[in-house]
Image 1: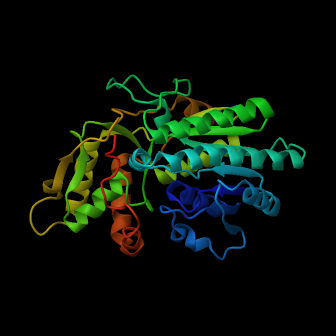
Image 2: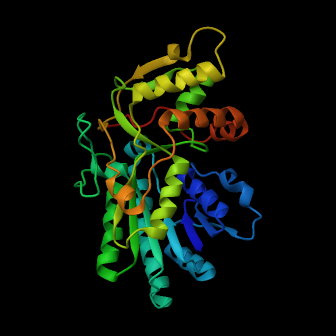
Image 3: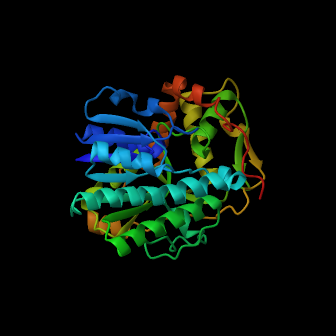
Length: 349
């Protein structure tokens, strides 16, 4: 299969590119190379004849038409997005332009191409989204996000992703474009850009800096190992029912404080401090405006319809992740110099 992957130099997108290439697919990586992109994530395939890279911004419709005409993909996996909630609080405009207008451009370019190809039934437009579109959950573990949960976004980021989800569904219902959608829980793992919680904690700990935890650390997230996520995304692309959405979770709920404590324990074992524990660096900071209390995924649909479930526990995944950062200092050192990395963002609310 020939896959057009948007955002393929990003965290989740590059995991999809690597997995697709490993499985023998042809991949066209479309990425604008904004601040969080890193071609090192897919450098191992740079010279592979089955891989092509196009530095193209999804906000540029004409450029997208050229990419579709040139490469003639069998399917689209649309991951390109602005994704950091804190940055969306400080600068929501980029999120509106990329996540909403960019998705509109992708849909129109894909639709024009699909029509020109006589509307092949096998074509797919897979839109990759987030569980944050559903809002916040109570602490009750029996209450989880399902595919039928009403949308209730609380941040500029989640509102922009909710908007893009609605556009994708509308293009299916109105124009018949064969789409599938997925909404995932929090991802983590190798190549995670160092502005999100897990890489920030790992790298701050190694540098002897404070480990910032928003509020009292009681916010709960469901953690999904990025390589598990890539596997689920490929499965939904190949086996998912057109017009249908699938929630993808790690089935690993932890409070932010529990997560950081686990990371500290792993680091204490793998790279002990000269004195004391990394736990001593935990610092509670002012909470994020509108911080959702809990996310959790009900995995029933993807498990029963597609027979998928995550392969690693959060403890196993965190062990792998910490070791990857210990082994790949050259990768993350260069990224720490990029704009906003290492700074507290999202306090303007």
